[in-house]
Image 1 (cartoon, rainbow, N blue to C red):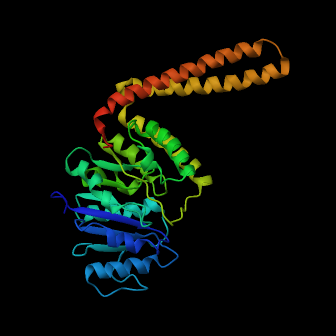
Image 2: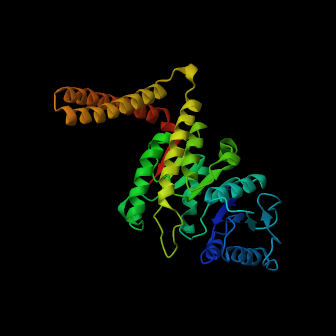
Image 3: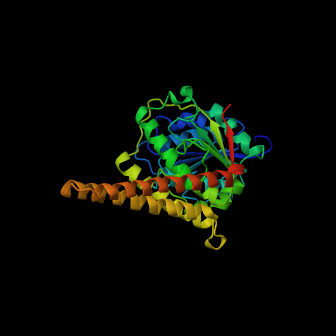
Amino acid sequence: MYSGRTIGVVVPAYDEEEFVGEVIETVPEFVDRIYAVDDRSTDGTWDEINRHAARANGEVRATGSERGAIVANGGSALGRRVVPIRHAENRGVGGAIKTGYRQALEDGIDVAAVMAGDGQMDPDHLPSLLDPIVDGEADYAKGNRLVNGDHRGGMPRFRLFGNALLTLLTKVASGYWRTMDPQNGYTAVSSRALEAVDVASMYEDYGYPNDLLVRLNANELRVADVAIPAVYGDEESTIDYTTYVPKVSALLVRTFAWRLARRYPIGDAHPVPLFYAASALAFGGGLLGALRSLYRHRRRSDGRGLVELAASTLLLVAGGAFFALASLLERRVNDGLEVRRHG
């Protein structure tokens, strides 16, 4: 237990036979249960999980079968510190985390954290994520590697650029404008929050943290942004960015619209969705008008195209103004839902 709360740690793993065992071994002693979820790996990850689980639980090692494991979500974890769980088929990292969350809820765990099976999450920083929750300041806490240069130093440049872009997009989609590094998977969440966000319907691919942030805001839950340095070693990323970026972008657009409808019902006539809608219309009209005016000017070389370009520029400026107003109002609406621990 930690400060009187039961703690569970979800360890999602796919083809991590070199790292998952060390992750299990280094989880702090105050953690009550470790849910090691093998997302149907193709290497020896499952055997490694079973071997370390047997050692931690004082059991005879189970090899090559499902003996001693929970398959999908069935069974009970009571009485064991390490709970091996194996998916019948690969579902993605979000799906593996969902499985761990659901088992933690079934077992009555108070706070569930996530420590990936690739060893990128330093167990020494786990208390920093748990403190905002057990202290009653937040319902969800997440790591932030973008706070200062020392923390960002361990992140490869291409990841840093992509993360910064997704940070901006997720701020808009989620409404948590002060929260950064949404792709950081080092998190902790209260059972209350898990029950509120409907874990069963959560996104199952790499965009799961973005989806979860949107769901948290839709339920007006508090989020803590905790400064934690990046840790990269010999592990290799399995993210295919040619499909990852379009999929997450589409997810953010879809969940953004859903969150606005949830937080600001039409009957309330709240200005936030109205300003966002006006911004989208002005931006869209301005962009289309600018492209058309440039095309006409090149073909005809008269002044009409320049007049249309000026009008389109005004629309783009108006779109920016409407967007700024909407984001300012959202910051005020969500001010009490964000906690920053960057010391």
